[in-house]
Length: 399
Ligand SMILES: O=C([S-])c1cc(C(=O)S)c[n+]([C@@H]2O[C@H](COP(=O)(O)O)[C@@H](O)[C@H]2O)c1
Ligand code: NI
Image 1 (cartoon, rainbow, N blue to C red):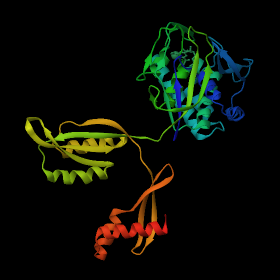
Image 2 (image 1 turned 90 degrees about the vertical axis):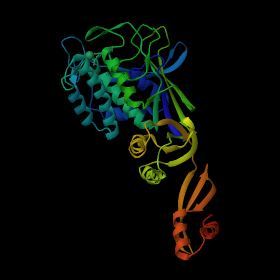
Image 3 (image 1 turned 180 degrees about the vertical axis):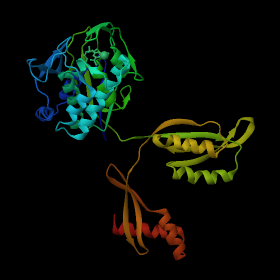
Image 4 (image 1 turned 120 degrees about the vertical axis):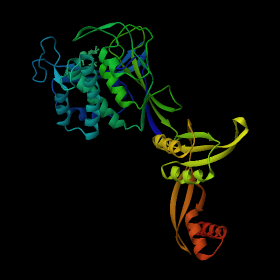
């Protein structure tokens, strides 16, 4: 089973909503606050409370800024927002006592905001001065989200498509359109939509956090939901302003890819060269099926089963080594038994026994074919005899 976090972004996302929703999952608040203190940042208080939004109980996370005469809260000319650049923020994070994973994740999130700001304002990433996003509350939101993710340590994080909002919002730059330019820049190539709700549902911080965390933006996949949590948004819109997150389990079904191509004009010798080459390069299985093709030509369907990360390399081999001009591909799910390799001290010496378990129960085992073949040849015995003998020995000595 894999641990999954799924963010349901039906009314947008901001930094404080992310923290609130993750806290609402029930993580140890004291430990979270202890970790945050490792960031050498002063001049703020945190308030974590339960609130009701349209009758739904949610966690609210507030950063309350203290007296702005504090050294950590220097005024800018235009507002009470501190102007830090990306390097200042990186230094602040790197000089903290936080764990390396939290530091790396926090910097990655800030980098997204910096890149987006640089693009929008046509500046170099290190020249960008964060306004709102440089302020204490955004640093807390981003580093806090990284701390909570590290504390929860999910195997995978997924999110829904992102609901954006419309209209205009007051920012340090003036009255800017919703989604804010930095927000929509960060959300390029991510599925987004608008239901026409007036208001800024997604902030640059929220966009940067979720695009850094989520592996995929997908509809809710097949999951067993264990906990449902709500993080409250500060503003009230015509919709309930909540970020919902599911903590769930997913059965360990492996997703693989099948590459297929039909071939009617290739010598058999090529296949005998191709098969070991594909297997050595990461194919999990390679097989042929006899087919009757167009123009009544008998042919072969070549099928190659592989993990997605090996797909491109295997496709290149198929293109270079065969006569095909095109390859079909489709994702397939595979379940598999847990397997163990066990050493057997047999009468022929050490032999590997492959054992297979279904939900922890041993259901089959067999001696390794290659090792049996070598023994059969060396001893002048039939392969079947060696197999049967070793299986019996394994039953007596191991199982
Ligand atoms: O300060 C920055 S980086 C900033 C840039 C932009 C652009 O789109 S450009 C917009 N804003 C607005 O500031 C507030 C706060 O955002 P947080 O991410 O800190 O919550 C929000 O309204 C943004 O649209 C800030
Ligand atoms: Ni900006």
